[in-house]
Length: 325
Image 1 (spheres, helix red, strand yellow):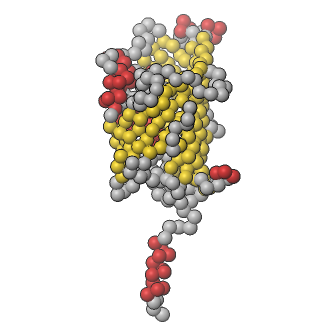
Image 2: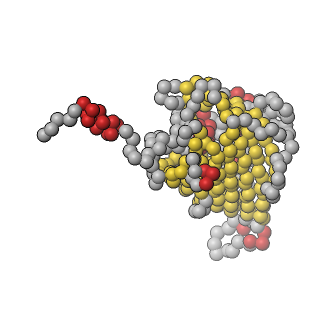
Image 3: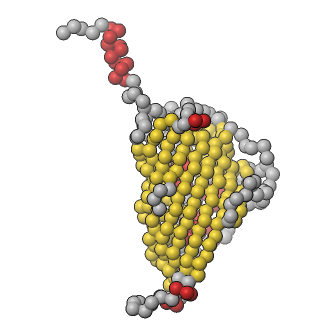
């Protein structure tokens, strides 16, 4: 057998060491002192049907549906966040400061407004003007997964002060574990290794349903390759979601507790992410979700059964600076 020359051996080694054909590295590229802004707009439409509690009786009696109450509500909110990279480590992970820098705008249903609502004072975001709002320190992997959060105690004090009941109601949502899951939902949608079109991966997340409880969901991501038209240089990722479990919020600080709950996530609702692999940064994203379920709620004397349908859509845009207005 002929022996390989030095050049041939080097070429062979390079061939085996190089990434597989068509694979792309999708990862956040952090640069010390680098900064960017994120605009997030979330729209929620919710329908609650509260069944007549006087008919909470066993069969064969039939419940009187004419006494049911239906409540429809909707809102949207817009927030601007500033991210600054404080430090970058050899493994590509980074330490970031996340701070709310522009007011929360709230509008009730319908949502067909052409412009944002005027600024208003807010506990979380601070007064009108240029004063920054709440901030957190995040430790983040290149995939966007948040591994550590600092500053949550200061945030809890800012929101609840010395109000014991309010602190108990939001303390769980502001715990480090809860914040890591929530923040990873925004940043941690990328795979941990290089991928090619058709590759899939999973992430779990929690949905905060306020005083009703929390729903754990599983996101399935799929890499579809480059986009089309104006997105031809961007990498396209799609997401579908399924419900894993629901846990009612039963803290004693509330006047009621959720004793039972069953939810499903409607099929057909997807999320789409456009990522710039060269810059190592998200460009924009849009997600939709429809949650349907039934709850049994107990207060001191009465049992209520509630049917819930909630539609939520979120659009995210990443920018180098805030808009002029």
